[in-house]
Amino acid sequence: MAELDTSGKGGGHKGGKIRSKKASTRIDLTAMVDLAFLLITFFIMTTTLSKPKAMDMAMPDKSKKDVQLPVPETRTMTVWLGANDKIEWFVGAPGKSQPTVDNFGKNGIRQTLVEQSKKIQATHAGPDNDMIVLIKPSDHSTYKDFVNMIDELNITGITRFAVVDITPAEVAQLKKDGNY
Amino acid sequence: MARIKVPRKSTALDMTAMCDVAFLLLTFFIMTAKLRTDDPLHIDTPFATQALVVPDENLATIEVGKDKVFFGIEGTDIRRALLEEMGKQYKISFTPEEEARFAVIPTFGVHMDQLKQFIAMNDDQRKDFKQPGIPVDSTANNELSTWIYQARLVTKNLKNQELRIAIKGDSKDMYPKYKQVVDVLQRQGENKFVLETQLKGK
Image (cartoon, rainbow over all chains, first blue to last red; front, side, top):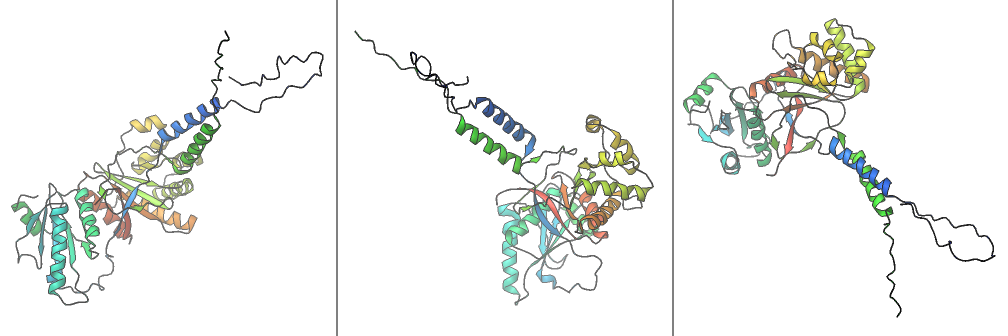
């Protein structure tokens, strides 16, 4: 396929001067392009472009027991994560109000979080009147539920939350409601 | 009658531009892509809206899936030093050749007494080998805790930087296994870490 400049041929220079042929400066790049695309294909196949994404997670320091401040129970919302992606939540002290069963998603827990947060901010005097969410994942909840729950808090902009171990009494309540 | 001559056109195309584009793309891919590593656990991470970029270096990844825990750390020099330290802890001596082989294993999930055998395997054998996962019992046999602790020390000594920890959990996995891993971290005073996720819209 190499192109040669043939313009010098057959010019019919009878007895004229011998001219040196002008070599073409064009190089056939087909093979090079082939090679380049082959390499591109190889790299697309063997590598991954999407870098893993992550979510920040900070747990409370267990070694410092004395720095915990007392928090009014009326400002806390407790969320239990049960089996089959079910949630139960209540506001205030445990045992006083019946927990509500909820689902994940836009109309589920997200709406609840926004509503309850507003309610608590309205009924408590500032400046420290944010809602505090206690997440209590049960042994039958999945890791996905846990990540979803924290993600919902991120979406709704609730920064005060803690992950707490679930108690046997709470597990019993979940069992009674058929969510364990 | 004079015949109309159809001028013959050359079939050769000018490939210069195409070649330029091809090499440009090639350069782009080489620069940005990261070699796909074999994931022995086939973890399907959950979706989340918050998307931080996972750091590339000084990172240890704890993979949790199918009730097993795997451990991986970035950097061949760190891996090499880590194996030496772990050998000292568990009274197993590793040869320099074994250290070199270990340095190219991105993640693993074997008990300490299986490690020598695991390192000796070739890639195909390793793929077929069913790795039991690293023990995370709360009792004395908590090898994950030792791995993390030694990894932190090694990173501090070699790079003078804190080791960052990422947990890569499978979305279908149950919560208690994750809790076990977090407990291990918290007992070492490691309260901040990242959870690997996939990005989703709100």
